[in-house]
Length: 258
Image 1 (cartoon, rainbow, N blue to C red):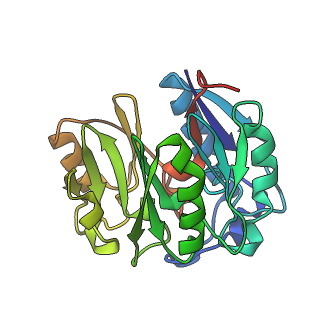
Image 2 (image 1 turned 90 degrees about the vertical axis):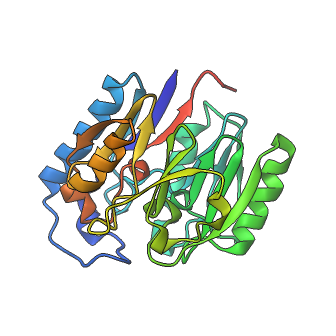
């Protein structure tokens, strides 16, 4: 049984952190409708959704993927790379505590979950403005007793590693190779995003379904041509907050339990 922790859109989302996209007006009602449609799709695909209440003082708090990594054996609470976002971790840790033993990375380490791409027992971690070498060193130490391998990946053109590459299943990545070092992924097959859709590398694979932003039609066609079942979802308002599809949920196997 899969569980997804989500959080309602903050009314302060209009003041969200932006790094690689220009600020545009965000329609709060539309953003909330799109986020609810995302939660409903997760439920339709058989996932139990735990939706946390909005955090009015924390603009980016709907992006629950960033303050934690949840593995079968434990959850790691992360020191976010942006000071304004660091208070997000506390309520998320409380929500995860019934399901996992908690541990944490501490300053001067920095890490955000959007930089962590897990494939089986390897965690590829982006080196970005939000995740540093000390954070990666601590993660590697914490996970070594559980036999996980941690691999650092230089990222240049985007906010997080998973803005540039995600895993679709069947040994296949969806990637924008201009934004990260592809060398650590040499053993994987790859679908390259359409060059006119550089932000299209963030997909959420759930079971046999690939959830994918409706706006990226050319890349969607490439994914479908490779034999994947794609369900498009309109996240156009959330994309103005530099959102992808993986960042709005923390999905884990709830059969592995405390």
